[in-house]
Length: 123
Image (cartoon, rainbow, N blue to C red; front, top):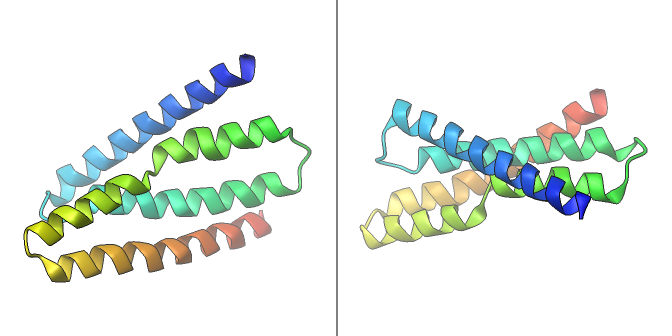
């Protein structure tokens, strides 16, 4: 039961961090493109890779790793918003933005994950 409460707390913190960062980015760049979600997804990929590498070699229970990676990171970076916003762009006839959103976030996200791995190895 204690692990479940920690998981819920981590998920709540991840969701709050996602909302705060996304709102900040939208405030800076506007809402013509899903910049807030893009930044959160790319940052989430990087942080997931970094967290994975930093926790890989240390003795830690599986529950703690689940709390960090699925609880916090899973709430911080949600793929469903990315797909929904891509769908909205498609409905609006913004085909170029759909391609930019789907391929840009995916390719940059893979690169960010790899950078997180590299930084985690150096740490």
